[in-house]
Length: 187
Image (cartoon, rainbow, N blue to C red; front, side):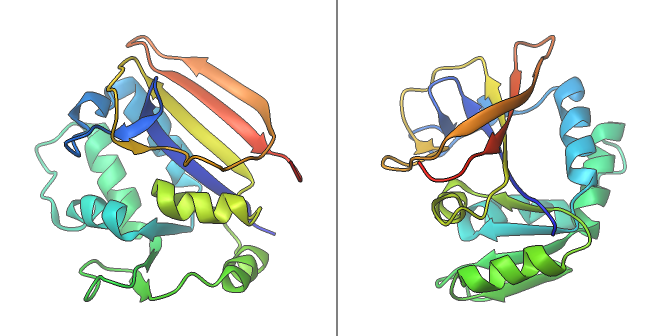
């Protein structure tokens, strides 16, 4: 069975974007970006909510030729990953290797995990919360950025409860802290 991981880059106070929707404060430096690339290299399929998909879709068409190696590498990884977008409001997907699902079917996600040969990832806190609540997420990869933004979209919603076991940690030169947790059983 393939594992499903939720990766989030968040402020120290737990937000993936600020009250205006901005996340420029969360842009990874080259060291963090290379580390994220190594994590994402393992994934075969990425599950997205609409908002994050719309943000990430730029990676499909962005001409990254003049960009740093870590950016070019990530673009290639993103383009080569199968993507499933869960949205009731998105008209259509605009990127390669992407399919649109109108409803989140938890049994289908379980089947994907059972049949996948490579790990799966989930992006977007709303979708991740639903999968965490259903105990389908095996691992959380949290990058804490040295910023307090005071509000915005939370990496984890109020009311979500699940025990975690810290299995890895790393500090980066720019002040980012990486925490990797195994998700436990019933809370």
